[in-house]
Amino acid sequence: MDFAFLSGMLTQLLKGLPLTLNLGILALAGGFCLSLILNLMRTTRVGNALASAYVFVFRGTPLLIQIFMIYYGLAGFGFIRHGFLWPFLREPYWCGLLALILNDAAYTSEILRGGLRAVPRGAVEAGRVSGMTRLTVMRRITLPIAVRQALPAYSNEVISILKSTALVSTITLMEVTGIARAAASETWRAVEIFLCAAAIYLALSLLVTRLSAWAERRLSPWQFGETP
Image (cartoon, rainbow, N blue to C red; front, side):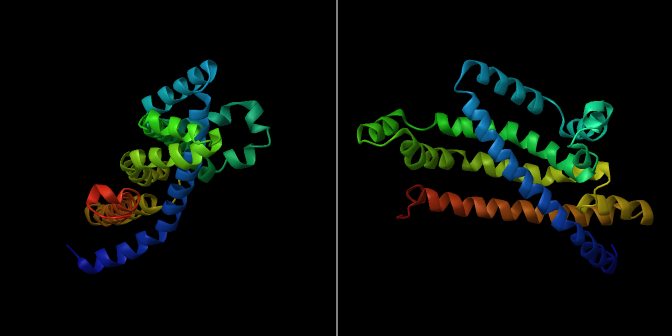
């Protein structure tokens, strides 16, 4: 192991970290918003069928295939090439981000759905009996309980999306993995280079795990023998 080379390569790979974080954070934000819409759709019969089909397709197919379908496949439709979205969809960044958002929404919607199902019916009924409106019940009772229930599973989804950003390197984006692939093809020192890349992703995963544990303790202090 050449530690001088490892140090220099780690510095070089960190230049791709802003793009990795940018894609991960925006994908999580967009996926969360879309997942809320999917759960609202489930309140009607037709909407439930459409949301279920969406979740089935995006959870049942590999993210890499979804990236390729968006980046390479959409260009095959004339109405897209000549439409107002083409200036965005011809760029690898927006295609990669769109694929990550759509994929994350499918998983997050199921996580939120499970959290919402875990809300005790009695708590909701107590809120309505006390005179709360449906929106107030959602804001003060349903969502806080659902978030607490869904937090452990959602933290895993956050880690999964951060690691999945590595796949956008296949469509020329130079985030951490993209820089690592380029460097490995130039130096033929793949083990050392990808070891540095793995260390960066491992550090991100550890950070998310710690933040999730802190948030869980803040939201449910009584489960850890603490007082709110």
